[in-house]
Every structure is written in C-alpha cells, then in structure tokens.
Length: 256
Ligand SMILES: [Fe+2]
Image: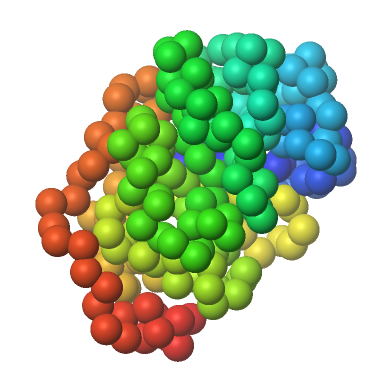
C-alpha cells in the first residue's frame, strides 16, 4: 500500500508540527501495511508560504531520523494552482524523481485560467495529479466535469476521508461517482496528523466491499507504484457505459 498525499513532513504547513509526531504517524502507517509515503506539504496556497528550500531541508532531517524504519519516503508537494505558478515551479516539486506533480485549487470557484495553467504544466513535461477533485464545488455540482480533466492529461486523486463520508454526504457521493466511473487514478489519505487513526485502510476496505479488489489495488498500489517508477498511467481505463446506478451511492453511504 502506497500513500501519495500526506502532510507528515514536519513544520512545513498545517500538518505535522514536530519531528516526533511525524515519526509516530509513519510508524503507525507502517503497522497498517504502508510501504511508501509521499510527503506533500502545501506549497503557495493562501495560508502556507513554504518554499522548496524549506521542504528540502525538512525532508533531509526526516529521512535521517527515519532511517531505521521499514518504509520509503518520497519528497513532493501539494502545489496551489495560482496564475503564473507554472513559471515558478520546476521538477524540484515533483514527486520523487518523477514527472508527476500533485496540485490543488480553490474549493469554491475555479482558479482563473486553471485549464491554461494545467496545459502549461503538461507542456513543460509534467504530469499533474489533481488532489481531491470531489471536494471542489464545481465538480460536486457537475461530477461529469471530472472527465474533462482526463481529456486534458490530468490525473485525479480521491481522498480516503471523502469515501468514508468524513466531509459530508455530497462529497462522499461525488467521490464514489469518480471511483465507480473509472475517473480516479489514486486514493490517498491527505493525512494532516490530526488523529492517530490512519484511515486509508478503511477506505480500501470500502472499495473492496462496494466495487472490487482490483480497483482497490489499482488505486492504492498499482498506479502509485507506476507513478513512483515514472511510468505513464492510462487516463481512461474503464470500458463501460457511464451510468448512475439507482440508489448505489445511498446504499454505500448507509453502510459507512
Ligand atoms: Fe493535502
């Protein structure tokens, strides 16, 4: 199991506030079967001003302290899509040694020119992964918009907490719609270290129960491993008619 979206890197953002807490969280994740963790502190959103140098410095300290732990740690970031960001960022904020880069945008309204920014990132040879699309208002209101990102060479990462209903039923319904229609490429924790309960295994269990084992493995093992190897992942992988099964999401939400 690989977690590609976490805020475990200490003293960078609104995630872990100490090296000790980071180590405790990592140890807990290893116990639950995690082999690889991608550290993705917020970069340049409205309240976090971490720069690449700080991320690099904290990463080196964490790697040294966690040297004896049975886990691979990979450096990354969660890049806020401000206009002009594509000119300021480079491979140093990609995940590990790959071309994949985790990005986020406003929850309320689209970042102005979001498609242009994403296009410019793709033109630079980067592979953007949009974090938690199910949490953005415009996708919640029109989940079919998610498919448009795939046509634009953007991958989608759903949050474990969304599938478990932790952000409310509308986000949960959108998250399950993305998984059921094959629009999601990754499921990750977005762990902000606010609890000792590590939720990714619960989301995987829910996918096994409600979809199938292959989808659970694809989103938390197979695709993440391909990403870490810098292999290209298929944007469209599900050959089926898009249908909203009557009562499907409600049934899942009742079970959670
Ligand atoms: Fe995040």
